[in-house]
Image (cartoon, rainbow, N blue to C red):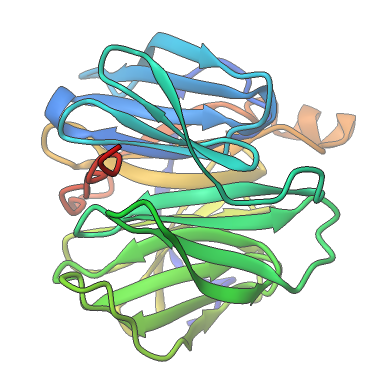
Length: 303
């Protein structure tokens, strides 16, 4: 089965009719039953509720004077936020604290997708604004506050995911249309050799999430679809999205049975917007499988 002929499960439903330039990084904060996500280009971190009818209600938004790439929460309610070049910590009382600088100032790069690993370490990637780099990085923030480079030969670091037992770590290089896999030890953070897991031929793989059957759900930028891949890399199903640029996806809700899909409107022509007028909105879909319990960030290192 190739990228052009998956089994179609249906079409995602509109969940939030608010246009985002680049909605990304949906994160299900299970302890508080709330959804976090970002609008990268507007510098917004948003917090909302997934309602019983599949719609999303926005409760709060935090605005920054710079781009933000991703957000995740800790058990305590603290957040880690990928700023444009620096990681930020938001304490449970709302106070913002600077974390480590990841990217040198003025380097024409920014932080992109990030996610906690099964042990709570924070993994974060980078991109180049001109999309011509082949030296973008994937890094891990350890419990001691140190940043360690995992990869330094990427074009555009993007979606991340782990198998249910934590032993397989998946990472995306969007411009190469490639998802990699490597052995992973959640206890120590040790990793094996990076190998190609799959290469797409239709659309660019963006954000991803994993279900309880260890299948990958991947937002396919440019073709209005979310693809489901088996643990061996076979494309087994897809969801149509009424937006051309799906950017990321996560399982949410008390039963982890609802997919939340973010999309983008940036860069679309007037003709493309007319053809897909819901671009930039959030969507939901119940695919008949459940997601893995989301890993939480371990929290900021001791000061």
